[in-house]
Structures are given as C-alpha cells and as structure tokens.
Amino acid sequence: MDLEFRAELWEWRGPAPFHWLTVPEDGCAHVRAEAAQASYGWGAVPVRARIGATEWETSLLPKDGGYVLPVKDAVRRAEDVDDGDVVAVAMSIAPRGGRQANGTGPTC
Image (cartoon, rainbow, N blue to C red):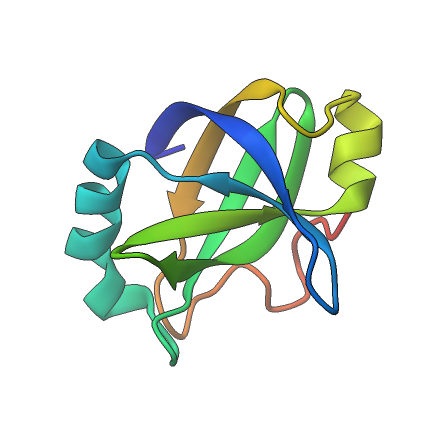
C-alpha cells in the first residue's frame, strides 16, 4: 500500500447515508501528485483500501480542498468499527485504465 494514515470515522446523514474517513493533509498531497494519472472524472480517484484484514476498492472523492474515503457497511461490520472510531487505513491509488476495480479485485 502506498499511503497509511489514521482517521476518525464519520457519518454523512444525507439522502444516502454513508460513512467516511477524511484523508489527512499530508496524505492529500500524495493523492494530488498521483491524481492526474488516476482520476476518471469529477475529481474522483480510484483506490484500493484496507482496514484491518478487510480490503475493498472504491474512489476517493474531493471535499473541502482535500479527499474523503467512503467506508462500506460491509467493511465496518467486518472490522467492528463505528462512528467516531479512529481507524488505521492503508491505501493504494490505482492508475486510470488499470483501475483495480475492473472486476478482478475483492468487492466487500
């Protein structure tokens, strides 16, 4: 994994509630450096992420000048994490055209 960080899990209670981790600023600098080769539109950056023993594929989304990582409910349940928990994350950015989410990776 290219980037490791710790962040607090938070819930956005919009029309489609979801849980997120905010990528710390030093991690955002790494993402920005790789984004031109990976982003596929709207600023989304495809990644493979891991919390504990659970890996999944998703995309970082831009927020407030940085990035947020969506955390699927299946990942939260598998790793027993909830709103307000600080979790360790390992993450790799996938290059455009070679995105891991081409059907070959785990999809929790």
